[in-house]
Structure formats: C-alpha cells, structure tokens
Length: 481
Ligand SMILES: *[C@@H]1O[C@H](CO)[C@@H](O)[C@H](O)[C@H]1NC(C)=O
Image (cartoon, rainbow, N blue to C red; front, side, top):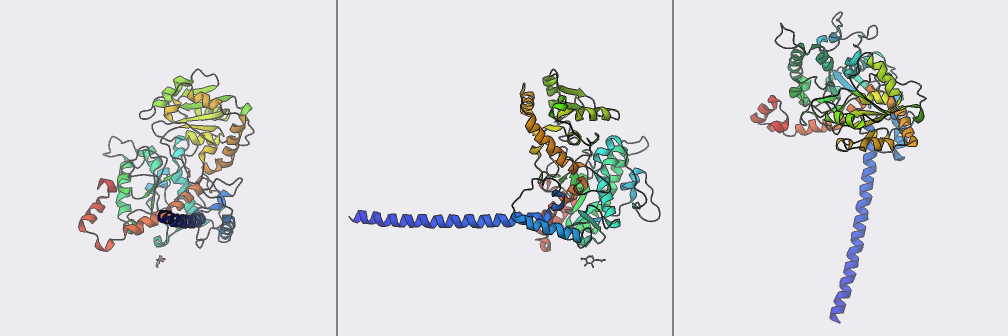
C-alpha cells in the first residue's frame, strides 16, 4: 500500500515535471522565433532592396511578407534623398588622392592642373580592350566614385564619395593593380625591378603611413586585386584590408577569405545575346567548351574531360584561348549551345562563367574551389549545374547528367539567366542593379563585421604591450605571429 502510494505521488510529480518542461520548451521556441524575425528584418538595412525589385525578385535570404512594408519605406526614402550624402543607406567612401601613376596614368592619361583625377564631365580615359577588360573592375568602381560627386541624379547610387575620412564607412585605395600587372610586370633590361613591383612598394609605403590606416589597422580599406597575379607583393602587407578578388586560388586563407573579402565577377568578353529568342531545340550544340588544354595546377580535369567527351557528336570541345578574332567565333558557339562548361584551370575561376551567363548558355561548373560573386543573396543553383570534379571524371557521368536535363528544366534555367545577367554587367554611368552597384552593395554588407572587428581590436588599447606593438608593425597575418 505504502509502495503504491509512493508510486502514485511520484507519477504526479513526473507528470508535473513533464508539463513544466513542455511549457519551458515552447517558451524557448517562441522566443527563438521572435528573435529570428527581428534578425531577418534587420538584415534589410544592409541590402539595397531597390536593385532586387526589377523583374522577379532575387532569392533574398529572407522573403517573409512582414518585410514588404519596410522594404517599401527604404525604397521610398532612397528615392527622396536619392544620391545625397544624407541618405543613410548609401555607402560612404573616402578615396585616397593617389598620384595618377597608380590609376588613370596607367591608361596614359595626363593630369591637367593640380587635380590627380580626370574631369569626367569632359573626358573619360578609355580602358584597353581585349583580355585586359576581364579584370577592369578597378576602373569601373573608381569611375563610379568620381561620378558620385558630379551627378546628383545618377540612375543608380549605392555609394557616395566623401572627403572627410572620419565620416566614411570605408577607405578606397584606387590602385589599378590588374592593369599594372598586365602592362608592367615584365622587367626591362635596364631596370632592377619591374614597374609593377615598384608601384606596389610605393603603395604600401604610402597607405600604411596614412592616419586612416593607423586608425583601423587597415581593416576598413578596400584594395582591388582582381587579376590572380596582381598585387602579389603588396598583399602580404595590406592583408588586413578588404580585397576585391576573382577567387582565393592563389591566396593563403589567412591573407584572403570570404569573411572579409569580396568576390567580383569578371567582365565578360563574349558579345551579349541581345533579343535572345532561342529555345532548347534551336540551340544545336549540347555542351560547349573552349579553353587552354594543359594548365599547371588543378587543371588536370580538362584533359580527362576531353578524352571522355571527344566522341560525343553534339559536344563542342576545343583547346585554344579566346583571342581577338576567336571572340566572335566563341560568341557564336556559346549562343548556339544549351550548356557551357566551366572547368577549373590554373585558378578556380575564369571569365568563361560570365561569358556563359551573357550568352544565356546554362553554365556547368566543374571547379571545387570556386567562389561566386554575391552568393549571399543569389542562388546559383537556379541557373547553373554544379558537378564535383571527382564525379565529372567518371566514365559517362557528366554526359548522362547533361542529357538527363530536359527541355522544361533547361528552359527554366535559361529564363533565369536572362533575368540575372544584368547583375554581371559593367557600365559607365553605372545602372541600377549592374555589377558596379552589386559590388558596392556586397561591400556594404561587410561593413558591420568590419566595425565589429575594429571595435574589438580597441578593447585593450590602453594596455597594449611593447611586444604586441612590435608584432603588429611587422604586419603579418595573425596565425603567422
Ligand atoms: C570630419 O568629420 C568629423 C566627424 O563627423 C568631425 O568631427 C570633423 O570636424 C570633420 N572634419 C572636417 C575637416 O570637417
């Protein structure tokens, strides 16, 4: 009896416990979901929603209806104060007035008077054509910054140049490093060092001695190095800065990484496919690839794939780089293909992906280390096929996969390509939602984490030891200390 009684009361206690835990768990869930909603609405402060409203909205991380009102208000506010300095949503950028030898001087522009910048109302120095253009990001961003002061009513404004660096969100280093690499990396017989090396040395000396650099340790600086071989020397000193890169292929992960850096698209060299009325059945080539055959590192997959695909009758696979008159031929080829291959070469990325997008040819990406522009707000799986290299080199794997994608699915991806292609186009003047705007917005999304890092680094600034100072002045990545 006593035993039964005891059991009875313990059952009551157990069920009370159960009820209490249930209550506790549901409360936690409720709090958690409130928190998530708050967080997702906060996110929109750092995304320029205006570029996302054209045609079908991009798949933004959060699509909940609660944000619509806020989005509208943001767009409204933006229209009111469109490109003015009072617009709190604009990225405010301070640009160093570097000597022209670092930027437009590399385009043979000569300064008149004492300004180091061209008067863009009357004269826009032009950029050399051909393959140089794929890395011309430095040129378009700099022009857009200059334009932000001249044209109050720009069609698109994600950024504005300010002259007081204390008011800036970021500090822009206008060195055209890719052009410097393309043009001046060969050492002339009477020179000790190439001009490209000399410029990098000068740049490091200048930038690291500036008040702005010392204030943040360089963390809020924007340094462009889109060509994988550009800035090879200076990057070891300028690594605390945010780099604008094409990929991380040639970088140690402590010098460049997704957390602090921004991946920008290549400028495509293939002709855009205007008024594309093509369909699945009107594009005769199933799969298209043109590129160099043998690449040093990581490019072995190209050769493997060539042997796997060379006997498929509707596959176009040729070796050779897309040079001058090759461009017209490659344009025609990509415009007539359903799928376009992007295989890692000696770097994980290449402009072929952006050529494929401009051709509305569904990209098939075989590059395990590739990083993609604006992937935090853009879902590439909607218009690209990704295949792991280890799978792609299996007998028949790739061709079976491609052949299994039927008209309906291909058409959906093709339509999506036409919707998003403008995100990868560079213009001057820049247009709403083009690559120039998208890159500034990607930079804007990094600003809160930069601020956090800067603030955190100041925690113990009163008690910095002599040793720490010494280490910092060596400017080595933290895990090399
Ligand atoms: C620059 O901005 C800071 C912060 O807003 C301000 O204190 C300072 O007076 C400004 N400097 C000049 C020269 O206007």
